[in-house]
Image (tube, rainbow, N blue to C red; front, side):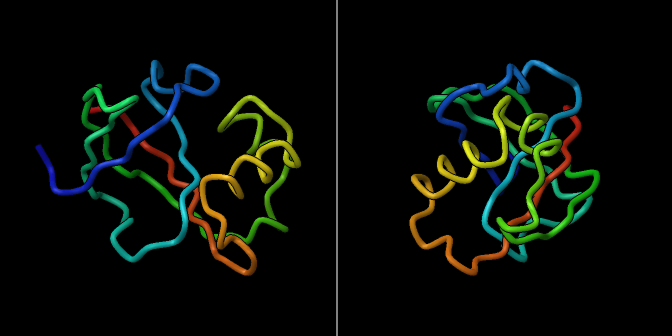
Amino acid sequence: MSNLSLHFAQNFNHKLDCEYFTSIRPQRDIYQVGAEIDIYCQEHFLKKAVIINLKTLTLVELDDWTAFLDAGMNKHELITLLKTFYPETEGLLFNVLLLKSC
């Protein structure tokens, strides 16, 4: 298993069943293109993935297209959800990770 891991509370939009999927997380330097990541859902290991692309944005820059792709909900619903996961979101930068299953 790799050192990095992403934990999902649920499989929003059934994205974890796909070969390619996204994840929106607070910006961290450990998220780099090429990094291998262990993927967990509800504490169960699902698979390994590799980051194939990423972009950094604020929640103001988040659009409906990305929100629907990532979580199956509109921008405002996703921002509300992200604020429950990460209460310190005001002014926080987020990484949108594009991952490919290994």
